[in-house]
Length: 431
Image (cartoon, rainbow, N blue to C red):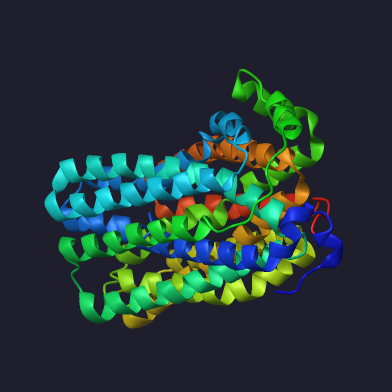
């Protein structure tokens, strides 16, 4: 990894000799975590598992909101606890182990239960999983900001995404080759068990990171930024900090690439996708997108994370518009191989753009703040986004009751507005 001297001097002296080794460990841990995410993906694997277990369709619609909002909403409440921790890596490790236990529970449920009981039990485990991800999300960005210099953080995120893409491709091919057309609950239970093992690996890798100890003075200062009511604190921070408010607004408008994939998968099923657009096909598509995007977008984020977010959302919205137009014109799409290929290509392109938006967003918020402020920014922005996600997700689900095309059109329009708002963000990534 290239070491940026100007950025390196911003780090405490005790961690400067370990920049390279810390970077390797962060990449490895993030890659293992992202690989585990593929095995418990709320947009692909879990919906297929629900169908296999005979879970009522109404519960399937709760997977993505619980997975995403559940990891965001509690962050402002947990932040004071994190700020009292001298070494933030231990917070991340607790989160990783929590995710390992919850995914292991999902594997047992998949093997032993079915129907409504299985659905409620897996959703309960998913809530615990999201809480574990909440801890890891708060800590990971702060650990990265305290151990890796500015100008190299985007490459860290990009390399981790690339490594996860390789695992996703292997997993998808395995499902396509050995899983057949009908996946059994036992096979999916084994995949979930593999995911639990990956999170144990994440915690082991993270223990070796050399992190500077937070001084008592800084810790007290960080804690003083917290108010008794975390939602009041969120309100004041968004009201008084204009750059941060602008970032939260833009991030809220860039949900197009994260909320639309499940609806695209559902639409493909409605058009008779059974083979190429099966579970393995979608996982392969997301893996290839991560492999390509992680390699490209990491360096782009270090040059301008704001433009990466905006352009990625704009292309994602354009893809959704293309899908809406194709589906609205009679006889353009049907139950045939090229329709299946069309949906796979659209899913791949959308996931590729989501990779760029995610890498850009993570890099932007880390570069935007320093010290304890970084932890607060991450937690408060994620809590605010959890609320926005529930609102936008609720509107999207309501529109989907009438027609999926209305949902895709709504998300596309929101994304286009986000492109305009994102172009007005200040540059923070240049050293």
